[in-house]
Image (cartoon, rainbow, N blue to C red; front, side):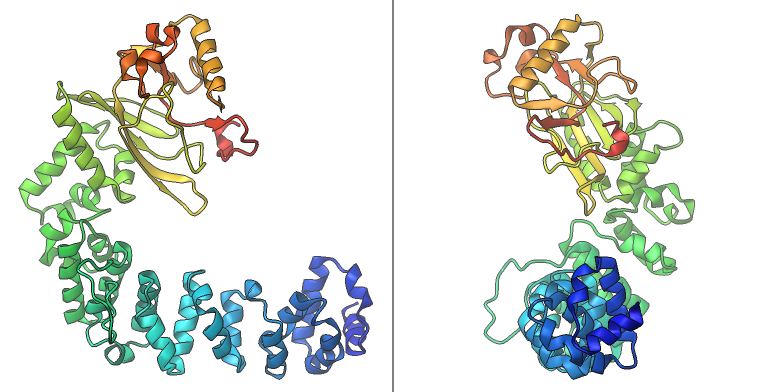
Length: 470
């Protein structure tokens, strides 16, 4: 079939293409590109199909030098993945024109595109393109260029940057640049990685300059985890207290590891120990460790200090845990170490008087919007609702429906425990005017304590993890 198809195309016979499936077309494209006679085959159909089937044609000719003019004429940037772009830049003359027109589109699409373009710019000494990447206003683009430069063309570093540490903010030091007193800072993960790459490549002066900049300008950083995870323990030990105290993700890991905790001042360990004790279940809580490893440890410490100061009682205890979180009472407040949420809607839970209010809420999501870690702080509720007359739960559902929402989880006596409690007073409800609330609620202020699985009634395609039972 492939042989006859190629022969048909070579002779300008194209009607059969309408009967092919997408899979067959892809196979045909590969066959044409791999043929030793591909130029003659393409010449047979390209002028017939380039207007009616530009995507099909472009997928065949995008990097074939003999067809660069036509490729530029019918270019379809939405089908150019980074491998195609690499081949276009390596094999055709129209790559420069493509980048002149679509550079911003490519570099804001994916990191791999930035690396491909960086390789092309550096290997071919494209001065203007190098300048656009090395001083780019998008600081992540600038970092990826720096990363590629250090890993692959480090001999060019000093000719591109007089001092690379100067270019980790939005300032570019270009002529006639309007300076600001508050320049944007490069992402903390990016600048931490940049510092490590410089150390790894023995650019010690640059490493120390950027390290001090990080410790001065950023609230926390990833230096400790990068050093300890890449056989740079000696560099960590040199400055263990500052690196431990400023670590986003490794403070608890270091605290628990005698190999490294012995290098940390006792007062710093004692300070963290006070936090760890509040979340004590066994030797330590795995959910607490994950909270720190996901970068929420510093925020958690601030919340503990803040709400213990507000509390009348100063003790703490483990309340319980489930699939999505572990819950602790600390002082007068409930702290939830969130592992995930069943919902991954943009707004995971509405603010309604029927739902306990989050005093603090911090979620980390992946690219799909699924929560991978989080923190919630609520007023701790001790009044159980599982002994209420069932009619109050029906009233709850009626009111939830009136407000425009539905639920996909149980309220009481569910397989995963109780999802409702009673407020200490209806006046604590999450609303502006509690006096206007229904009388039944004033008598029994029933609230949902699990802020999840509540959706708009008109939402026909809810974003909920399937393992949530929906």
